[in-house]
Length: 349
Image 1: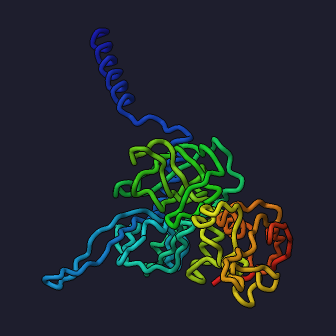
Image 2: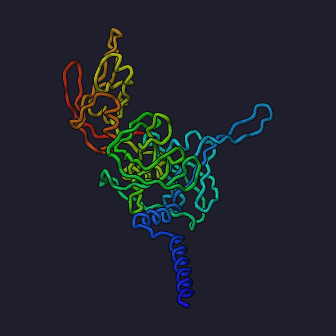
Image 3: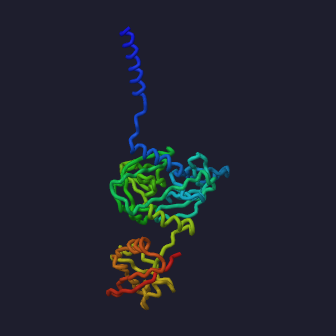
């Protein structure tokens, strides 16, 4: 009797061990947080397809040729979608696929190649539009967690995690202009992730995944994201005006390649628009004298105390720091002597 009882107990113990060993392990707090972020944010992430339309010269049929794909995210319940400019560059047709797996044709509302940002708009039911929650990028710290959600290589809704690896990086946009204050992260960003959100550990938007640095073109642990503070500044302008409103002097500058050839450091004024801010401040353009000799215009060497060594220095300073109506102190070289003037910035067309 005792042996039978012991055998039954042994079988019950084996069954208990089997059940326990095959039960899912308890999730760690960090895992639960990542799962929650994915569940909360993935409905806001979209897949974007970019196609071009081409004519067949013989049959005259129209063919739609896929050009690429990327990611994006829902900005508001009006159907505005944010992505990178390079994701929709040269597109004849753009389709946005939401989390409900339905495809919606999109129109371009506005874009800024200099900032690699674009705004699309789709007509979709309000109930499927899940706007993302913007955070802030000013207070980011190196080492804090970063989460990327996107569609790498067309694989929808993939999540990768990492940290903020560095801050204040600079990358080049498709237009060749510098993008400043870029976030560097080791959260995996691959082709197809472009335009997708980079998030903090609370699931708030801190940037838009934009580029990778890799000798091979594949993921190498160095990804870049445009900071959300720049997005919050630029996107409302793209929605309202279709472009970014810029402030400037009202001048045309001598191209940098020519400036370098004649070995001049600074921003050389080629033309001054009549009635412009520069015109009112007394700045001179490049001109010819009565003998037909070229007299270079004023060479801007600093603005508000910030050194200007090239056209890019001047334009970047104004874009990042100034708006229409602001006053700037301009130092310039004329006839070998340095002068100064104050310019009230105008809005550029």
